[in-house]
Length: 144
Image 1 (cartoon, one colour):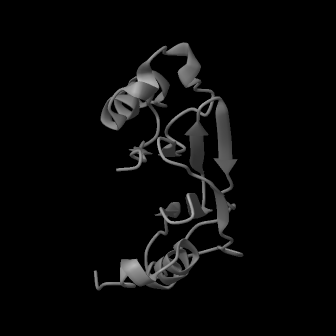
Image 2 (cartoon, one colour):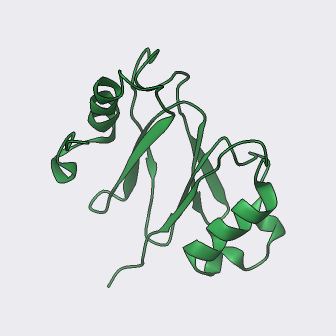
């Protein structure tokens, strides 16, 4: 597939809009894009379809909104949302193939471990066996 937009100059909403145009001849997709702004300690997010997106920071868990629709077909609007994402915060995105009732507090010490391990635990314990599933976990490093 041809390059849609050069990532460093693109915002999440623009990427979702470009994907919508590129996917018109397909069955479409649920899709999300996120960009961490290290200078402002925020994450910007745009999603269409059943995508779960969260920023975990200490005792705080912020959900980012993904609008209903199918990218490439019936997408009404793209809206970017932002949330604080300071150093050491963890961002988790997952498809609807993962149940939304997960609570990492039930896994003491897990958030201090590798993001790959966090993703693996979510996949292992919360996958819906009847659907495809994706989990992405990213942690901001501390200063220095």
